[in-house]
Image (cartoon, rainbow, N blue to C red; front, side, top):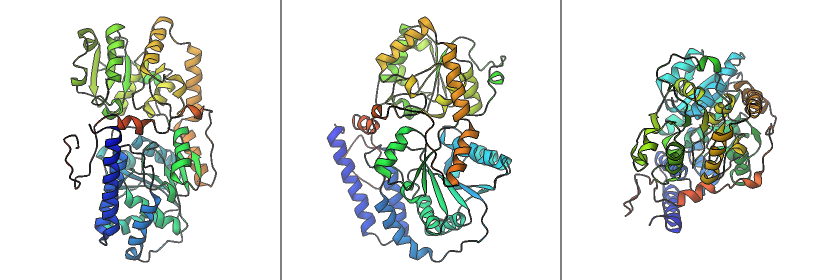
Length: 456
């Protein structure tokens, strides 16, 4: 079986093959392509390689002479936000978009650069806020030169990039060498990523991201950003008359399919059986749409489970506002939706390894404890004062305004500390790496050929 040590050995072999190919190549375009594949390989596979600044420097030394002399304008006023890809779903894109819109509202000179692609909806949302959206031109080294010129025309740079975006990481190195400070948003906090060690600061989102950066990412400086809540009026979200919102009491969970790991683990399905079958409660699941993983549940459980698939952000917030409690995705927990649930004064439950996010203290460490917590909630409810206290803390420390304040303090040179305490000894930094080794699923770059029926 391709698990455990066998899987680790395969990872080491593929890692070595790609690095050897990069070392042997004198073709810059090929090296850039290989480096991107290397980053994607470690990111998607949740390996134990967190960063590789030596590789970034190797590629940089190859491209720097080819890039040649670049002009740094003397008058630079804009803050440049850099996004690899923009999506209509998930929490990473709205984190970037909401920050840049808030800075624009504050009369800041802001620009968004997209290194790869974004949906029309995202581009329209940013453009409608009178924020310029720019794209680097060309491919390969031409694209890198274009990106460098975009970076060098900025006063400061905030990176919201994909972990495999070697182009943006290299442009950041150029910018830093020319005295322009880059700030890396560590949204892939538990995965490999290019860029953090080259930037003036790493903007952290949880205690775990802070600790992993200290241990693995060679930071020059760290500052807390946090995961901002969405901006909404709860009473407006709760207005009745929308027939797409279930009229019966229900629990809700929101997350990408990968967070539930339905093909690799039965943990979430077993919990749904308990909630919807044994306890006869209704549950709405936003994200997954395939009922196949739930096909072996009892008829009662299947009847009480509603899969809605991907919903837009406004509809997701309406569905959450009408629910009686929020279940965080697991085995891999969520981010923005948990913060939003607490802002809505919803009871929050879950079963995951703690990452030191605000709200982690309110979820269980395993599914048995989660089931007991749900049983207690169904019997006794949740004190309104507790829910109000959480919502107040979110409003004070995780509003888009509070997160933008921390961003701007960081850009000004300050290291902002995390505004809440957490037992860091309870955080297992290698939890997701160990869980990944337990199943056979693995992403293998398309140019790597191995004799394994489980590769994809």
